[in-house]
Structure formats: structure tokens, C-alpha cells
Image (tube, rainbow, N blue to C red):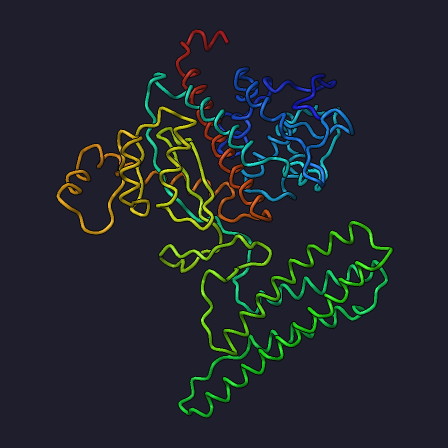
Amino acid sequence: MREVMKRQAELGELSIGSIVLDPKSRDDIPKLLVGLQYIYLNRELRDEVFSILQEVIPRLADGKKASDTLGRPGMEQWKILVLGVVRLGLDADYDRLQELANQHKTLRQMLGHADWYDQQTYELQTLKDNLRLFTPEILGRINTAVVRAGHALLKKSPDEVLRGRCDSFVVETDVHFPTDTNLLLDAVRKIIEFSAQISDKLSLKGWRQSRYSLRQFKKLYRKIQRLRHSTSQEESVRQARIQEIREAHQDYLAAAVGYLGRARETRIEVLTTPAASLCDVAMLSELDGYLVHAERQIDQIRRRVLQGEVIPHHEKVFSIFAPHTEWIVKGKAGVPVELGLRVCILEDQHRFLLHHQVMEKQTDDQVALGMVEQSQTRFPSLRAVSFDKGFHSPSNRQALEERLELVALPKKGRHSMADRERETAPAFLKARRKHSAVESAINGLEHFGLDLCPDHGIKGFKRYVAMAVLARNIHRLGVVVRERNARAKSTVPEPQKRAA
């Protein structure tokens, strides 16, 4: 049975409340652990977070949740939360996280291990499997509880209103720069590898020289890479080079079509082989996905190179391993294009992130109203929000003004007299001056792993972003707690300090 945290303390185990963390350390680990320690020591907050963590249960192959009373006990959910927060808070990969979980003294104390008695270690695959149990919904609810606890520490009164600032940035996916030819190479490479693997397992013929086949296909790709359109003044030279490029692409496409045909034959053989297991058949679904990618790239290369057609942007895919990747041009100096997804965040004046949204094929003006509505659902005291011009539209401004007391949303283009009066009002100018502070939150999130997402799939991307936001807020909570403790210590009278 999986427990949020083990009930019986072990010999030599230090209680979480007794863990001593260096208050002067400038590293991120003590700040994260102070925030986690506060969550555990605040009974009301701990009960709320633990009740949410009870929903972190593995799912079976058919999508159903595993039993919470049968089978071997899994890792406690508190440990999963601690390790997930540390991973994103330090922008660490799983190898570094494993080293910290096995060797870092105070982190192991936070995980509930005794210093000298408990020799339990964490395997790499164990960390990967357990940290993937989180969902963005569960992390979002924990994040709301953490932010409310932070507000309780910082708000001067319960009726104090929240003022937010909203902006978006790009979280890149871990992909190489895409061209239709190298995407076809990726697809054919995976097709050859999958076909050879399953053929070797079932003793099927046809892929004995799979490595040689892949090398030959790469040679055709390298030949295309080296060819450039001629800049000669003679028309005959330019046409000869164009013809050479066309022939190289024709050879490349012919080889790809041949490998696809062989892979389809192998697929039929697997389905008709009595020795094939359910796992073998499941592998065919992944092979089918790469076949679809290869067919699309063959079609686009043929249309672009051989027929001279311009491929519409909406038909393009920028990675076969991360198909959710988008081609984003934000006009930044020195950054012509970014490959990833936009993420919109809303930060309050206390530097807590109230809400975030992963924007799939959306622009800023399409998420402005939704960001405010979702944030007010969780935090009804939100009364003012500032935006950039990219969020502006007449309908947005009208809808936001109905929900907020102050909407600092600059208008695009020509301004009327009413627009100038609205944007020169003292409250509007004050909100706009403070809006740039949201860039600090974006920089902090990029420091917390949101410069590039290494997790796979759109689900992994959303989970990774949600965990980074939670880690950022727990880090902020730890900073607030440390500052409060420092102020309390500085106000103790000198005689009491000497007596202590």
C-alpha cells in the first residue's frame, strides 16, 4: 500500500521539524528545503497537500488506476514531491537528482532517512517512473495551496487585494533544427531500427544488414546537405546544379520508399507469426507512427523540390519526436526563431505565480481573459492585472474591465483621445511601471528548468512546466520564511540573546 509518508519513524531518523538548514546559505537547495519544511510543519497546509498527494497513484496499461491496497508498496508521495521540487528547482537531470538523493545529507533527512542507519538508495529508473506519476492538475492544486500559505505570511490584512502582471515566454523543446530532409532521415532511421529489432526477436528475415542500410541512407542525405544552388552567371551552370539537386533528392526519396515498403512487409509478417506476443504487436503501433511521419515528409519533399510548390506552414511538423513543437518568431534581437511552446504566467505583487497556461497554437490575445478568469477562480481578491500590447484586442479589454478594477492593457496602433486619457491615468502608469518585474519571474523560471524541456510528449511538457511553477513558488515560500525568521531573530532583546 502506497502511503503519503511512512507513519513509523526508523531508528536514528530525524523529524522534519528538527532538520537544521543553514539560514545564510545562498544556494537554492536550503531555500527549497525550507519551503518544504514549512509545508510539513504547518498542519493545515500539510493536511491539504497530503490529501492531494493521495491521488498520485500509478495507472495500468489500460489507463485504470492501480490498487492502493494491493501489491508492493511504492515510494511515498512526500518523497516524490520533494524529489520533483528539487529536480526542477536546481534544473537538474535525473543523474544529478540520483546523486543528490543518495548522498546529500539534508535532502535525505527531508526524505525521511536516518543519517547513519538507513542505507536505502534510489535507482535511476525508480526516480523516472515515480516523478512521472504527477499530473498538471494535481500540481496546480498543490501550487494553489502553497501560494495561499505564502499570502497568509505576507498579506497585511485578509482583505488586501492582489495585483498581477501577465506575460508569456517560450519554453523550447529538446529538438534539432528541422528541415524536411533531416526529419525524413529521423523517421527512416527509427523505422529501420524498429524493424530490425522485432525481426531479430522473432527470427524474421530481411533486416540482417540494417546497419549497412542506415549508413547507405545517411550517405544520400549527406550528399543533399553538401549541394548548394549555384551562383554562377551562366544559366547552363545554374540549371545543371538544379538538375543535380533534383536527382539527389530523387535517389533519397526512392531509397526511403524502398525501406518503407520493406517495413510494411515486416509488419504483415509479425501479425501472421504465431510467436508474436502482445508486446510485439504494441511495438507495431509505434512503427506505424514513424511510417506516417515518413510518408508525410516524402510527400512534402517531392512537392517542394520536384514540383516547385511552397509548403503551407500549417502542414509542417518540426520534430517527429516532439510533434507539439511550434515555430515561434517573437522578434527578439539575435533570436530569429524559437522551437517550442509559449507559456503564459500571471504573477502577483508578492512574486508568487498565481496561474500558468501552456499555449498550444495560441497567441497572447487568445489567453488573456482565460488567465484572469482561472486566477480569480483560485484567488478571488485579484483586482488588477497589467499586460503587454500583444494581449490587446477590443473584446479583451471590454471583458477584462468587467472583471477587474484596473486593466493596464496598452492599445496597439493609433490612439484616440479616450485611449490617451486612459493610458495616462496615474493608476495605469503605476501598473505599467511595475509590469517589467514579470521578466524577473520569467528569468527565474528559466533558471528553474524552463529554458528547455527534456521530457517527452505534450503530457510530459505540461507536467514539466507545472512542476517548475510549483518549485518556483516553494522556493519563494522558503525565502519568505527565512526572511521572517531573520526579522524575528533580530527583534529579540539583547539580554534574552545572551541568556539563550
